[in-house]
Length: 517
Ligand SMILES: Nc1ncnc2c1ncn2[C@@H]1O[C@H](COP(=O)(O)OP(=O)(O)O)[C@@H](O)[C@H]1O
Ligand SMILES: [Mg+2]
Image (cartoon, rainbow, N blue to C red; front, side, top):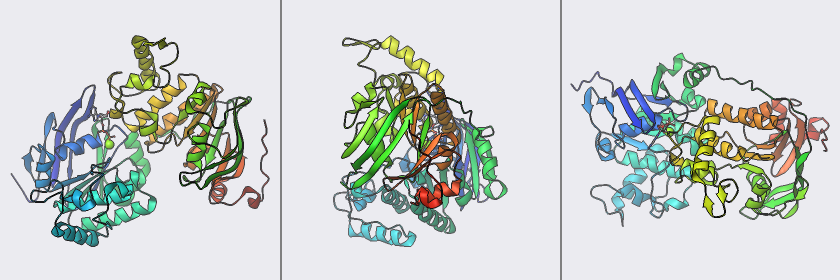
């Protein structure tokens, strides 16, 4: 029976299975009208799947969804939109070569997509003004930043009359400033009586923006609580199901020979502007050198030069004493250098390929997988299974396409693949970026294990806690220069923060540790 007092949305024992996984395992909770309701959970917890069901993209295998007390089978997004439900996906679904207005018009019953009527543009600008969501209706989608695309998606949903708006990890593509602006928009929508379902794995955001939070773990609801009555530590425990161990098991290891040496290295960025400036440092075997700093200070260019993806304008890169300046990625990898790239989805894996094809991406030319032109697939399969087991990758089988894995699983796959070739040096760029607490911790532990085996590791990371907790030494990068290199633990967090903001170490009144191999 439809009932005014019934909750706006009710999930009752919703089950959704995929081959090998129960993505939603009897999910039951309710969402009230006019609230911001967070859905919190680690990667793979089942958040996106549940919302895709509410939005009509998937059908549940069992269980029911009630809207204001009445059961609905939401068989398509069109039906969801009729019911006042809109969704902004994690990966935007806009047509790149069309304008903003054309994208808004797309799929509207009475609109021509070729030339959106001035009516559509007018209403779009009206909505944009009302919420402070600035957009140019005539801009092409490909010209827009991620934040702007997100605004278009939100406007598209509002245009279609969404009273309930689902946002899937909306802040993952935003800068901190854009995130704050988004939060203001969400508050405004709430004050008008709209309902927001906010998917995230970030505790700070849950505490800041939501009224109520439902925690999902392994497809099940752990709890639904008012944010006013909980805190981050309680939520993180619910999310991962155990205390988060911040004290990692650090293997002690004698520092060995220099494996990577960088001398007076210079390189330009894509805009042909100087990105790294006279960088000199070395990484020893059995050592983690952390490169701390706010992203965008030359980290990407540095990693690219070291892995053969970008040319240095001057200076030298020596790997095990051999000059590897301006060489190719393949030659770098042949020198037993493993690379964990910043953009794991585009550079780390080929999403459409199966797990086992991804595992041999780099090794396919080599023994033992390839004898002449023939690839030994049973060996590859066995090898992939071992990586799945050793690196705790949650996946039904080795033939699963890699793009179905969650972020943590993808990162463990990349690490597993890279490490199984017995590298001497690992270049890891933001290896835990975007991962939830537990997945990030596993990756750090895996890096420490590699160090324990005598591998040299260059850890490029924006996460200061991460850098300080696992590195042996830390070099701070600012505007392409090293502001100082210190032993881990030598400086306070605040002092490292000052280096990250561009204060050279000498000005902190300390002498730089000179570590020469
Ligand atoms: N289309 C799909 N096919 C097979 N498995 C899937 C599919 N979508 C999600 N999964 C699996 O379902 C589980 C839940 O995924 P998802 O809902 O995306 O989690 P979250 O959004 O919380 O990270 C994961 O194990 C994921 O690998
Ligand atoms: Mg998701």
